[in-house]
Image (cartoon, rainbow, N blue to C red; front, side):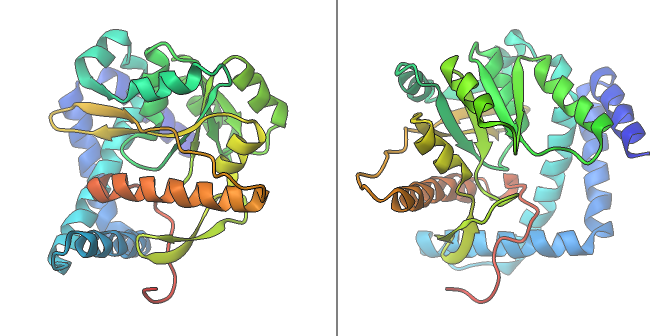
Length: 295
């Protein structure tokens, strides 16, 4: 049944006019807001921490009423994200030029000029799926690290959609040679860094409160001696986007390997904070990030 639903939306994404596809996506998100109280609670808790921290660093009062507005907008942005995913077959170089503002591409070019490939850390922010598609359509070799799906048939949909636009997929748990092979081709390896999936994370102060972030992206960069930088695709007004590559994250000067990883994760966290605070309703991390009271 789940597979048939995905196939149905794949059809709609390609054949419906944009305005109707976005209307349907937003409407489904609106219904989901009321039908998923546990998810709504998790999103509210995450956004409360983000907005409290934003208020703290900007020295402004925190407004609980604004929080609930952001929660609804987050649901709506997830609906838009899903529509955008199913519309991937429509994307080409012409559409990228029309819809995407590219910022900091020189940071990516500088990293790749070392001929070691690059590890790009990203987040569940904006549209991370489309970020890989757009980067590939700009002419860069790109591999996306992704979790295996429960269903092989659904996995085929997701992998095929990526590969038709030149994006290779490396599943978590794959042979390390997959990563080495990609970097030898001077490819970009994109990996999410704002949520723990399959590993024990590193304790980090994030948004003013203790949590755990994955060590995987930093470990990859260190083990494979590859440049390490952040990248995001963020939604702007009227169907426009910004593809942003920030400056390369400097490797700490210490002999202690575990300390290197910790500092890299810490530095990554500061950059993730900067972008999430700027676009809080585009942060689609639907797992509970913090436990306990404010640190």
